[in-house]
Each structure stands twice: as C-alpha cells, then as structure tokens.
Image (cartoon, rainbow, N blue to C red; front, side, top):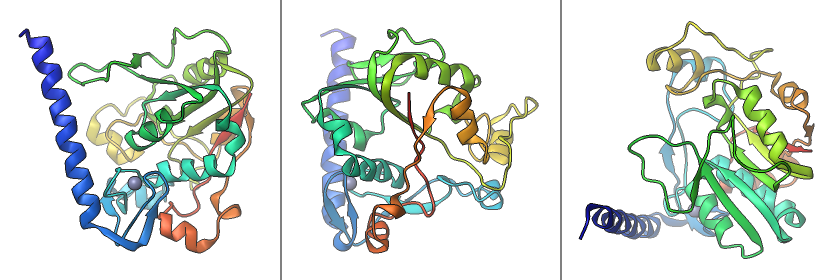
Length: 267
Ligand SMILES: [Zn+2]
C-alpha cells in the first residue's frame, strides 16, 4: 500500500470518527431552547466559539467575537444559519437548476447544499500547504480564477474578502464569473463605528492583525462603506435582514448575530 492510499484511508477514518463524535455531542446537548435550521435539530445549548479581542468590542465588529453560537451537531455558526434563513426566504433562487460556486465552504452549508440535486455545486478554496482538501475541491486564487465569464448563477463568499490583500481584484473576479442576473452573498465582518474601511500596510504580524483588524489572518477591517465597495465593483446591493423576515423568538432560537445584515448582491 503506498503512502497516498494510506493517507487517504486515515483521512476518511478521521472524518468518520469526527462525524460520530459530532452526532454524540448533538445528542448530549439535545433540548428545545435553540434550533439549527441546517441540521434541523434542537438543543438546550449552543457552544462557544470565536475570538475574544479588545478591538472586536471597541469597534463593535458585526459578525465577530467570542459568543455562544455553534451547533453541537453540525457545527453551523450563526452566520451559516443566517444564510440558511435567506435561502428559506428565497427558495426560488436555489430551487432551479443552477450552478453555484461556494468559496471556502463552511462544513454545515457544504453538507446542506451538496445534497440538493438540482444544484451543480462547485466548491473552491485557496491552496495552503499541509491542509487536506476533499477531492472535489477546486483550488483557486480568488484574484485570478480559471472559471469562465458568467459561469455561475450563484456565489457564496462568506467571510473571505477580509483575508485577501487585493479585495478589489477578488471582487472584480467574482463579478466576472457571475452571470448577469445572478446572485452572490459577499459577507464580511464589519464595524459601523468606522466610516471608512481600515487598511494599514504597516500591520504585518499576526499579533498586530489581531489588535487592529480583530483576527490574526485578516488584512483589513471593513467599515460602513462596505456597501459602496460592493457597488463600486459593479454589483447591485440587495441587503437581506433576517429581522424583517423572522420574528424575534425565531431569531433567538437560531441564535443569529444581533443586527447582522446579509450582503446579498446581484449582477
Ligand atoms: Zn446544526
């Protein structure tokens, strides 16, 4: 047996063990208080996740921070469940035969979307040495994608742009590969305390990035001007707000992030 086969067997064993662990953990936290709309299970408690940093509190960064929001069963986060509420309220967008590009796919949404047989589902991520990528993951640089113009009907790029040095170039690539009339979810963490997006080329180390941008691998902190950044890239903004679609009890059961809009755009 060569090492390639051995490695892949151990990867599949590790995934199976993880699935069993998550299922048992989900059962342990079973209850009625909270609900995950992705795995359709209810829990007495969600789990803690996220970073506890001074800048996140000071800037009141939306979509970031230490909080109790992770599904014990499928590991969905509040931002994954927010996207799921958007799908549930816009079924026409994902019920047809569409080609969907999911950048750096979150495991819970990935599992949900790949089961929808009407969707030609393409997952893509940037290659990083030492990371295991599933066989069907397309390895791409978001600033230089090998996809054709107008190839996709729908794109999900959730909390990715804040990691990319040249986000304008990434946005122009996302615009290029989206078909006219297509829809994209381009979500980022952002601060309403900043009138303009904060970038600083002097910030280079992980520690500095944590202090300034709220995460060790973020290269900027978006401000109130993020919608303008999307418009300048050519997109038509169509912000989705869960509070206009769901009642307060439901939002609390799903443990969505307070006041988080979803940046949905069209081409
Ligand atoms: Zn779940």
